[in-house]
Image (cartoon, rainbow, N blue to C red; front, top):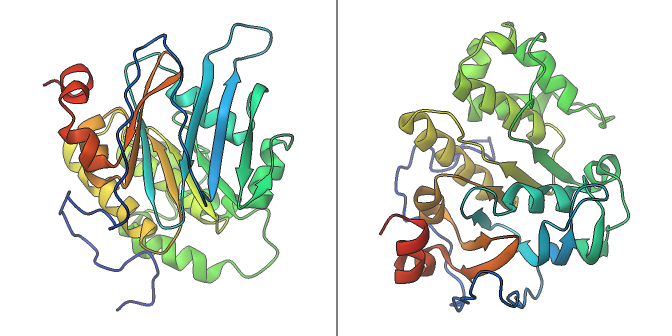
Length: 276
């Protein structure tokens, strides 16, 4: 076994990998109907009954609940405009909730700023503008560790082991990298904070299928170290194949919730969101 905590079972392409656990029920609800009440006992990160929007605008989220437990991959999928990224931003404190709460490791952090949530252990990779293009790869990683006061050398080596291409291009401007390599920089920078939970907003957007598979492999590796991972993903079928738990959102509400396997097997989910 490697000394790198992100490297166990590296390169495994088995898309059926999920952690065994208690069976969960799939909860359907008609769009526009009552939001699903999802019990999440012991969840490490949970946004519970979240209702809110941007500024003084209308609500985008309607009593929406998403959560992730230790060592788990949870994914949020759904059609465009369903509020998936808004739910992620609500968890990270980028919009005010009018109702609901966010808890991290049992602590209510609803009132905390994004900066304070990072200090509490939340790592967030937004979909856009997630790297410093004029800085080198290594400078980007160093920026990720700005809140740390300890030696970051070991963590940087772990990131380079996880993403070998970044080691090769460590002195190259991040803006010169391909789309997939930029995403690796963004994820690596978030890992430099040594997060307790990692949130990814559409990490495979705009990358090729081959690069998508590689990114998903790396996400699995990070999860196997025990870091909970919550991600929004446009490639719903592929994301659910690696997910322990999935949330299908429609119009800012929970439409279906279950394990990845359950949602992939649900005929209504397949017909409405996965192309049959």
